[in-house]
Length: 165
Image (cartoon, rainbow, N blue to C red; front, side, top):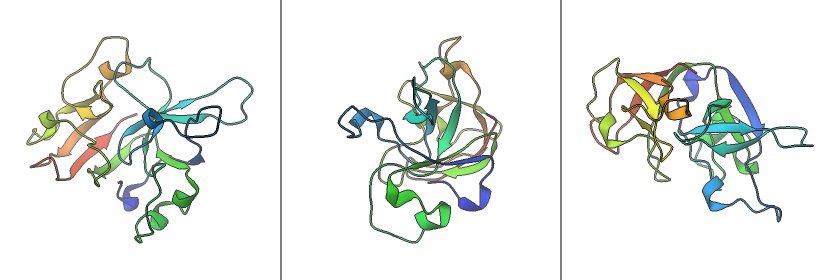
């Protein structure tokens, strides 16, 4: 999840990448707080959104506010963008400060982020979560995506970081 009070550079309502039948493939489920990439397909009017991984070629990326998994209304998602229940993705881009955590749908940072020092750069690892080690040069995982503002104390804690892309 992302603290809605810290939104910046927002793109709202793009659909997730689906297979020909219209079903969302399991590997394309988008988890709140993870990075996503915008993919423009031939003949499509709008780009689609897929989870980003450290081994991807660098492309337009953003931080997913919503995901494609329906959950009952709990008062938070409506605050973010009113499109959560329609299976669309709101993505924050262009930098900003964010609080992200595992809201029971998947980790958003690796164990090496726990207790990291403020100012440590963050990269996207092969699993698509933020970590402190740079990946392969020329790939998305080698790009600094943010800096730790306040590190989590445990895997269930909140990471407060400044995004730079």
